[in-house]
Length: 284
Image (cartoon, rainbow, N blue to C red; front, side, top):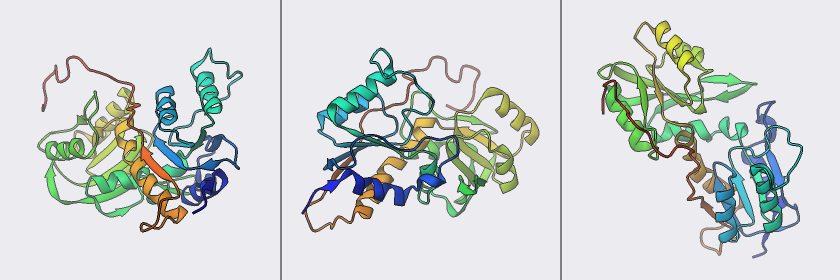
């Protein structure tokens, strides 16, 4: 069977995650690579870090697909004196293409938030909100009501473990049934969560002031809040993206694969340890 070109893989990715569905501020698509180059091995990772590129080079990957952009903001140099410059140089020297599916993967179905909702066992899923005309986030129902503490344990079990663990704002004994989720940073969706009637909201990167204000607005009631970490809430999407790309390429399970895919083993969560967690008391 003939090998695939990068242009064919890019076309498949853009069918799955249309670039026009990305937010206006985002930078998605092909970052490095020659559309005519052959692609036999594809590595999926959340972030295009130097360690991920080293892993790709060691595996002889031809393409890295990441969720987070490498060049989201303008740069004026790609000299190796900066991390971004060293990254671009490493990609080019190794002949490894880089493709980014970011907010267009967030709003896809299945996409980052739907994969997260599925992992938590949510039924009757629907969109949480609309962002630039595209469905974003998910709201769904648990199989049966459970305590907030039990649900937080469900989240911890479903997601990869992180240094920071799961942070929860709410009464551990409160009953929850309807759940809203937004993979990655989601503290700009509190109003949509309230409108949805969700009992608890799972997202990441929650900041002190927005959370404090949201809990004040709730008068200690719903929606309760769970910060499960940016890397953890988005990393589940990678396996889904691998499977969807293989299907889009049209590999026959009974025939030799045209491409190999794998999810990076590099943890790009930046945190390594915490000290004094639950120092003020709470559920351990």
